[in-house]
Amino acid sequence: MKRVYYDLHLHSCLSPCGSHDMTPNNIVNMAKLLGYDMIALTDHNSCLNCQAAVTVGKRNGLVVVPGMELCTAEDAHTICLFQTVADAMEFHQYVKEHSPVMNNNKGTFGSQIIMNDLDEPIGEETHLLINAANIGIDDVVELANQYHGAAFPAHIDRSAYSVFSTLGAIPPETNFKAAEITPYADAGDLLREHSELRDKILLRNSDAHYLEHMREPNAWLALPECTPECLIAALNGEIDITWK
Ligand SMILES: [Zn+2]
Ligand SMILES: [Zn+2]
Image 1 (cartoon, rainbow, N blue to C red):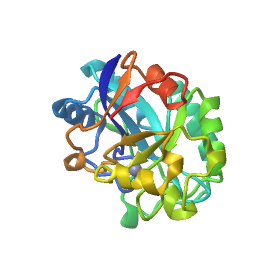
Image 2 (cartoon, helix red, strand yellow; image 1 turned 135 degrees about the vertical axis):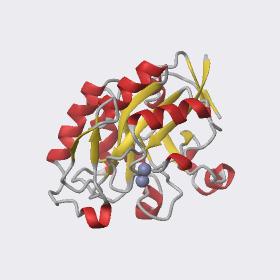
Image 3 (cartoon, rainbow, N blue to C red; image 1 turned 45 degrees about the horizontal axis):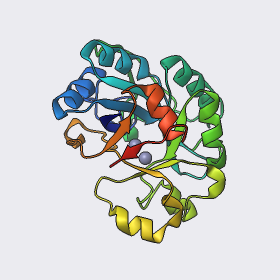
């Protein structure tokens, strides 16, 4: 087993609230400087910058997992991760077909920029990416599994756009095997208050929208190999792992 220091929740310049400095190369270089082994790119409701980030990661020796932060019908943010960009893009297409069509107001939300692996803008997403998709939280794990991926609820202890803020708890029907807590959450308190967390892997990710909000690694998963395949198997409960 190898201790993999991770940050599995990062936004690029494609997210309406993401800094334009969050380019594929800047994200990968900052993650390498900070000492990460594995990161995931998880823009709101879109995987359109995953190809660039994965390519830059491969060029620089950092594992980049393609993903998305999906806003479910309940307004609960959920992180979905995939083994390949091809799987992520098929999931992206499904989400797009199950999302309301509303144009982005650049004055309010900023541009949603699509980049290539040289950090050159190659397009803009014109539909606003922060709206809730017509996908229920009970269906997310099975849906991600259909595309060979895994899913976990994001920043559960946050007071907005989290499963706790909208539903009060993680319903058993959701079948999540992991959950993300915010970097400074008291895990002991959360475990006492929410017994449903006791059999789950608790992940701490930065949810950085700005380079300066990426932080030093402080959590790891012990995986057989540092690969998206092993990560997703662990998050689906298919292999037993230790974590901290
Ligand atoms: Zn979120
Ligand atoms: Zn986020």
